[in-house]
Image 1 (cartoon, one colour):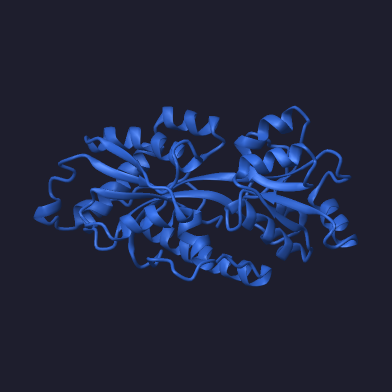
Image 2: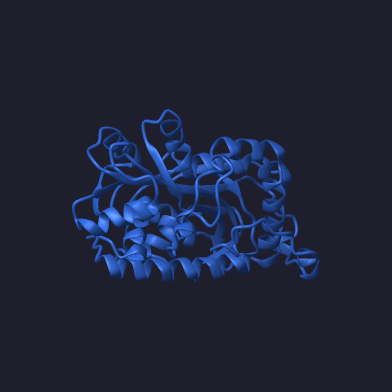
Length: 323
């Protein structure tokens, strides 16, 4: 994922090199609906609202965030997949419904690659591997050694089966050839509460949620899950630095329905990258432990294909089943 986790420049001349159809020449001419396939107040919703403010200013039209939670993000994503491809229904997507869940359930109502006109990767939020201080480990290598010494004894919490932080734990199991038992909770918050109470041993969670507990020494951070160290905890190594093939972060993206005119995709792409360079947005992202990331539509589509393939392997290796 590292080659995609970087800021990219606008494709110079893309918008002007394409003859703009009459129906998209004045785009946008009315407010835009941006569907966040999650409940209000969650990371997807918060990041969507943060991005939509400078993007709306650049486009010169209001962007209305429409929360459509349910079915692990499938409901909201499907609404956009089946919407009129005129640029007025957009998806603020994330890794769950676009790369993870399609590997877990049989009846996904859309193809995450073919049924969307992907605009750009927008942001990534690193996961951090945290442990209860009573667990006698201070690094990933020590955790792996402990888990190997007593397979199945130790466990990890998640916000539910198929969530990103669940899949991070399963990826660690696969990469290190260990067996730490998954304990699902009804959300990352209850999972964190269980870890703080020492009901479970470790878990992956978003860095912003974990940071206060790490700084107060109520939890111990072992590593970050992305390709590089976090500016918020620069002394903390990545999981990959322990020698494992491991990379995961919660990511967010902008897409429209398949068939959205190329000039509209080009306009949205250009203004999205400009919005990500907004000083106030950067400050907001920093407070949320989120990294602003731009990509070309082609780069994001390629990354998405890689992510889908990666989670297919993890699902197969872990034997996860979702009814």
